[in-house]
Image 1 (spheres, rainbow, N blue to C red):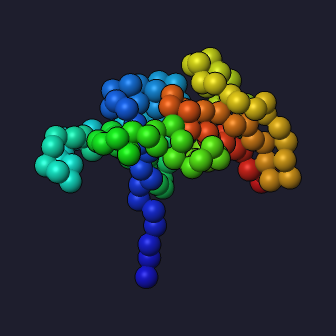
Image 2 (cartoon, rainbow, N blue to C red):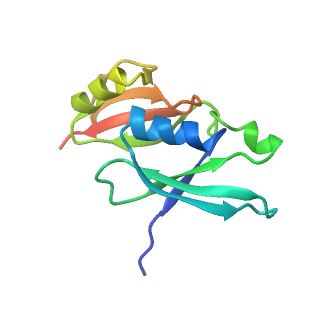
Length: 134
């Protein structure tokens, strides 16, 4: 048997602002942006983004469609780091993200497992930028 995680869902307020943040500020690639329907038959979009060179899980940008979903935007994990962006060159990506206005919440630090810094996306979800030690 072979299984893998295909997508991780990230609740967003607006498709276009989220696509812009992920493709411009983080340098992700837009994998798909297709019309779709939600569980109640309303129009929505199926939007997938991924880091450049990614061969794994994509991020599904899902527009909140009710009050409960909207209340989770920016805090899907209760304030913990939510997603981990692994890189082969921490300083290259850190410099590019800072230049593109990405807000880092904690400065870069060396840990036994690698170089890491916490940043937030446009909604306030916390991410780790991580370059593991080889």
